[in-house]
Length: 249
Image (cartoon, rainbow, N blue to C red; front, side, top):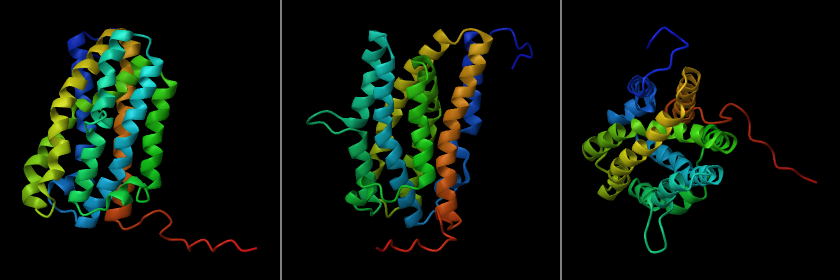
């Protein structure tokens, strides 16, 4: 990066610097590394799937908030596709339904995933923080925060190629979500990146964009921190305290 803190980056350098943050993408988290290496147990995979479900169902809400804050009709016309991708339409399933098939392919019961009983507090807090960011930020900043999708195709491709050998007990239908997201992610990145490059033009704004993308990386990393503590270290929330006794009259 240039050492002159007052000079705006060119669009090419700005994009390069944004993409450089991929070194902090959660693909490098120890939990994800173990997943890729085939080192997770069935229950650990199930824990990840159940917790990521909360992220999946929250993304359409996040995108609906973006639409509510965005006054540009042309941008809304493109962005709304993200909600359709996840929620589907009447008679057509979306990514959330496909994720539930992944959950079933790992042996989880659909109702146990839907009722969110397995969602860790740390995961819920991180995901909710993302929604709150979008609700309280400009629509341009919200678009920038979506750019972790730049790094997502790599992790999806890893799962498609490695899971059949390393987790053969997962039914093949469980890979459908990752296959679908490769194409969708490329499209979403193209749109979100064009907004970011167009609206963050001064060096101060570009530095802010870097901070925003780092925040989103923090959200994803923190989710895995909670799962690593609960499922790898076997230290789920309140593991070291006695159960709260029932309240009696």
